[in-house]
Amino acid sequence: MSGKAEIQESKLDGLKWVVVVAIVAAGVVGNVMFKDESLLYRVVALLVLAIFAGAIALQTAKGKAFFSLLKDAKTEVRKVVWPTRQETTQTTLIVVAVVLLMSLLLWALDSLLGLLVSQVIG
Image 1: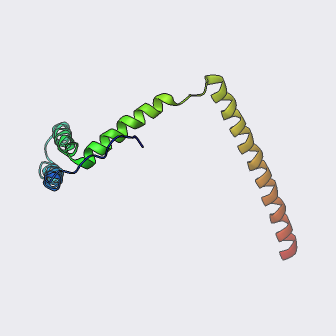
Image 2: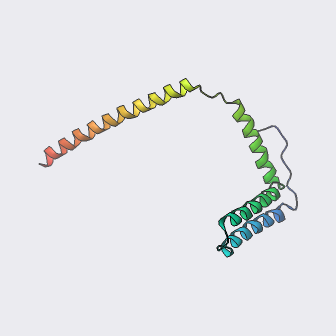
Image 3: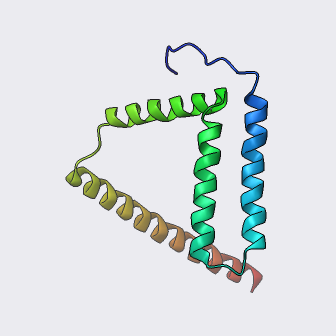
C-alpha cells in the first residue's frame, strides 16, 4: 500500500455508478437487438461504450483507487528481477526431470499395488 491519503468519496459517486451500469446494460441490450448487424460494428460500438463507461467509473473514488493500484503495480513490476534465459532453461529442465521421475515412481507404485491386489483377489 502506498502512503498516499485515502481518496474521498463524492456525493455523486452513486449516480456515476448507476450511469456506468446503465451504459453497460445499454451495450448488452444493443448487442442483442442488433444481432443481425456486422460483428465488427457491434464490437466497435461495445468498445466505445466500454471506454465511455470506464472513463466515468474512473471519476469515482473506487475508480481512482483502482487506477492508483494499477500505477503502484506497474511500479512494483519494474522492481522485479527477472531470471536470465539460462536460469529459466535450467529451472524448466529441473521441473521436467522431477515430473518425469515422479510419474515413473507413481506408475511403478500403481503397477505394484495393482499386481498385489490382483494376487489377493485371485
